[in-house]
Image (tube, rainbow, N blue to C red; front, side, top):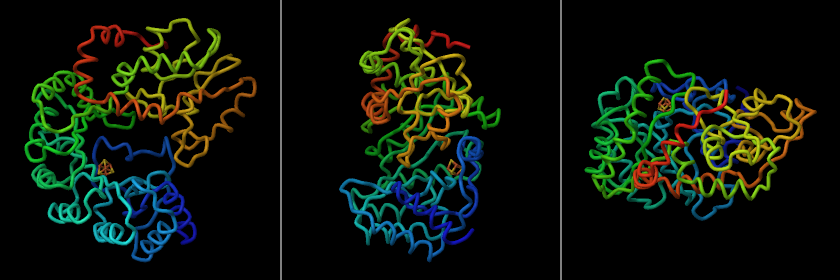
Length: 401
Ligand code: SF4
């Protein structure tokens, strides 16, 4: 790859507040659930070479040219134009992070399945308190770990990392009875401070049959697992963030209020994924034409308006004259009106000259992110979702063909 071309990619990632290190190859951990294993069908990435000392100096100098914004964090890894990998496998990663913390005064966000030396990362956290947001992808400590993460560090190593101040949040999921709940208990025992972030892994269409079956099996036990965690009364903050239908149900009042504020006519056609369709079908039936759009690009069990693509919407256009699209579909990290595949809204509109597309600006990612965190606690799920008989009616709403 030409140096100038590489530096242009790095600059683009840096503009999005990334620290774009590269392993120079696909991720060797080979997690069976990884959405990056076959990401070409929803986004393009460039094959960047292994980051060298010269590249690093370029990255650091570029970053230094941005103003320091209080509370702003820089993410280790580029994921708009580069492939996502576990960068803690890069032999210089920790040295460079240390240099970054020491010389820039800025904060970092880091993700890894556990490729860090427990002593070093915990020491670094003590040296730079509050500056490192460490999201540890535990996934599972139990019997399915080897199947799902064939080359990941051992569960014992992960628990050693957790035993200290470094980890800010640990994410792990339900794969059946006594999985998520037992992991919560084990993690809380060694680290009663980190945030526990749970739920299910969503199978996309590229996952193998065995992984898909296991994640779906796990979903069947999510309620039981969550109830068990709720009754443990752990000192950690416990959250559930992966289930869009739960988030939609818990935020139904805000969704309805936002829908009402859009001032739509009953003849207007509105694009939405299944979770929002179920809410509006139950509470605002016939107040507009609800155009249910499946997440075909990602496939599998994905069901989320934020992750819809223009190609998904194109498949459902048939004779409509005016179509309303939520702003959230086109809020690309670059600031341009592009979907998660990088396709431009302008190009999509040009494909359908007979249709007038209008944007619902009130339905944006700042609203959805805020709501995700506000009502994302296990307590909300157990008390206000499972504890509300209406959730059964909500789940029973069938989606149009
Ligand atoms: S470590 Fe992360 S990037 Fe690598 S295969 Fe696993 S989930 Fe994917």
